[in-house]
Amino acid sequence: MLKITPYLGILVLIVSIAGLWFPLLGYFLLLVFATLLITSIFRGRWFCGNLCPRGSFNDFWVGKITRNKKIPSFLKSYWVRIPLFMLMMGFMGYRLLSTQGLINQIGMVFVIMCLVTTTIALFAGASVSPRTWCTFCPMGTVQNIIGGNKYQLQVDDSKCIDCNKCEKSCPMQLEVHTNNEKPDCIKCGRCITACPTKALAFEA
Ligand code: SF4
Ligand code: SF4
Ligand code: SF4
Image (cartoon, rainbow, N blue to C red):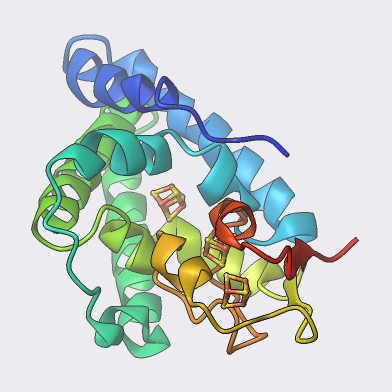
């Protein structure tokens, strides 16, 4: 299974900061959007737990300064996430239309979007838990909607001893072994590694 690496997080800083001087770097976000949309069809939020540069940034960089608190449950609600998705997409669409098709200005729209969301992710992650932003990130919500029922984590109840180690290891703070419906599972596999009885596995 592919594991997310700390090095991917560097890309977030490159786009957010160097992009202010080299706006074409913003087009990197199009590659990210395309990849996560395609992978979500088959594996739900797999991209978030294995390939997303900001996911890596949150896990390994923000993870060093976080207070590790409980993520407020209202942030997981679709009543918060869907309007936020529409608001951000609407705002980005408006900004893109106002560029009048100029290549550098389009790139700068993506750079600013990356900078703003990275700043929110940094503060939310530092003050609550590293993956707080990923709870309501519009791109995570899209993957949830497209493929939330794909590549589900299975629990073998005959092996589970209710030790709760899986839930303590889950960066998304999910009900790992008590709830089979986990559309926000990012397929990071940390619960599988933490389980002492090998009761967890992804569906084939
Ligand atoms: S939720 Fe958003 S920021 Fe977090 S890993 Fe997924 S796409 Fe990246
Ligand atoms: S349930 Fe397991 S695989 Fe899914 S996000 Fe939590 S730790 Fe990762
Ligand atoms: S870590 Fe494994 S044994 Fe422990 S509660 Fe989770 S699934 Fe059950």
